[in-house]
Length: 233
Ligand SMILES: Nc1ncnc2c1ncn2[C@@H]1O[C@H](COP(=O)(O)OP(=O)(O)OP(=O)(O)O)[C@@H](O)[C@H]1O
Image (cartoon, rainbow, N blue to C red; front, side, top):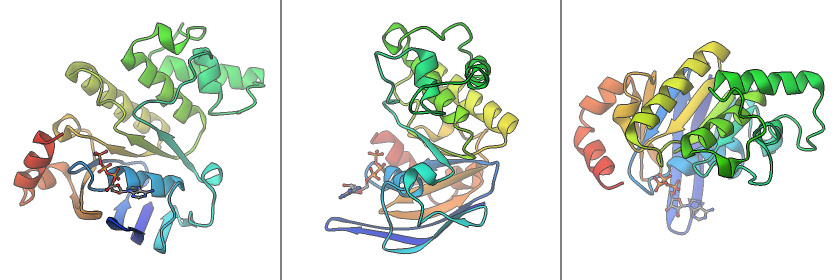
């Protein structure tokens, strides 16, 4: 289980105080108004931001003393951070070995992961030769090959058209079931994830204002705030 207890971050114009639990192996969609603190939450879990107080554990392990590379966490950014001069295999290989001196076993793992995300045969392509959706699949494959059990997706599919976005969310759902990973995904279009997420967390003003089953969040007392947040993004 991912357990975030009163993790507090303070800047001159923004204060966050997060509390949230996410069961291991589940998919939690993080929604809320722009500037509410969704990305900051993911950055804190990944170790890019350090809370002044609070507790952050994953399956009982305290993450706070660990630098980002040592955390059991892989993060996929909206702009996917692929290197344009590297092939698909090399970009994914960076998730395993930054030196890119890949063993045969690692190359096989990359091949099977590319297959799992629907990119069989794309291994020698470069990002510039692929569509936006295909590039996001490469970034997803890089996170998956790392073998890290907690995957954070920060608005990964918002630049895709609605049909493709939905396909990608279904792919994420299938992969997390097959690989038993825990996923936190920020999303501007909650309805895309309503039937696949186990949990939805609504974040505003640096706090988790509510979390629970998607139907309860989307149709509960927060519905007007969620509708306003979605229409403003
Ligand atoms: N390192 C930092 N220094 C100062 N302020 C920061 C820092 N990191 C985040 N913030 C502030 O935290 C607030 C929340 O930003 P965040 O990016 O987490 O929101 P968000 O909900 O992800 O928004 P969006 O949906 O627009 O991406 C913003 O006001 C931002 O300026």
